[in-house]
Image (cartoon, rainbow over all chains, first blue to last red; front, side, top):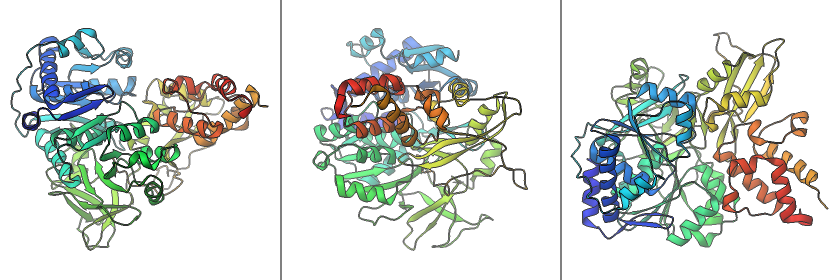
Length: 496
Length: 88
């Protein structure tokens, strides 16, 4: 389905610019041909077949995009992996999914080698043989149609169970998500969309990459976000639609960016984490960027987007997208009326059926076709959603979720650690940082350096605690739980 | 006129405040590598970079936006001293 729609868009406007990646500028016809050659390479050199899982560990680049449509055309499942993942996380993934191939570069491949979890086939995009295969005049492999319920993408997300979870999205779910977002944003052929959000993030993959290319727009790809690079790309490529996280927009405000650079921007969206109204006001005043907040999760895709022209209001994330249903539930699971705060539940064609191989968790979180992201909120009389807190303790680091339990488990492996608690500490501009309170066993010594070195071998860099406090004891409440010392009420997660 | 030691001291304080490390006085005095005392992911790199540029009125080259370069505080202090001299 995804490849067929892309083929259809490309056939309608073959000469239109599909993608800009630094000096590389690909028309829709170019991208179609390169994805077809990529597909041939995957089949003939990596032995990929329909239904195979392909891990992808890359920064944003044109090869990522070509590879995605190549996999979709073969009927393989695209598994985006955070480039910062290390031994423990990669070993968990390899034990969870039967990966057939890894698409990466020679630098990022090292972590996979160190973890000894390389799949049978490795495609290195910086390998000259691979580059030649994509640029040589070989015939592209024809795509074979995929059914709506065939798997297209496998995302990983953090929860509160001490380990990541696997979210499987079918072609129909991904397509529904992308088309819903495109319609809500009003993306048109010829629009230029800044794609600085990493494609390994669900919001970057669907909200930036697919929304652009399935709408006939031009994706302007940045390998990594840097304020000056983003400003230059917006000014030079005359970007109309900007998508980013609150962290990215905050860094733009911190930089010397000027209003004139953003004169072409017509729509600005933020997702991944809540944006403070004050940041919204400053972006509007200083750079002329009127940001609309989007809300979504890995399990549901984008749920709602703030309407243009609405006032700055904390937590306001707008009306649910077409065919997406949001209910507010009380503690017994009954629906609440407008104005009554409760737990958010989301239903619709963009919601996955459940996590891979997590029956107990699925019974808890996926009920009657509705997913409960763990956010608290209320609906106003017009049906707009206002978020007001979290019912689950997940740390949101610049739009990426971190499970405190996963970090605690790693810390507890240190022999000198008697007990610990990991929590999110409110900190601008990324929203929250990972903080750890650690109680050391009597007679033992433990340094901050030893803790960080231990974590670095086992966790992605963004999960390693930024703030480490050594304490005498970790308080426990009457139920045996360890109250998290959040500095402020936990924010809504806004993962996407 | 500033010295590399003076710049290094300012960098330590800047790292502590901009990255919310909350280091003790002893940890701060012996701090040489940022990635040894905390997670130093891409967001931290950008955040620290912005703080350094603001503090010293410098603009770094893109090639220097590497965690390894920015985490090495004595090396960074020497670079700053060489590039802004009396101005910092």
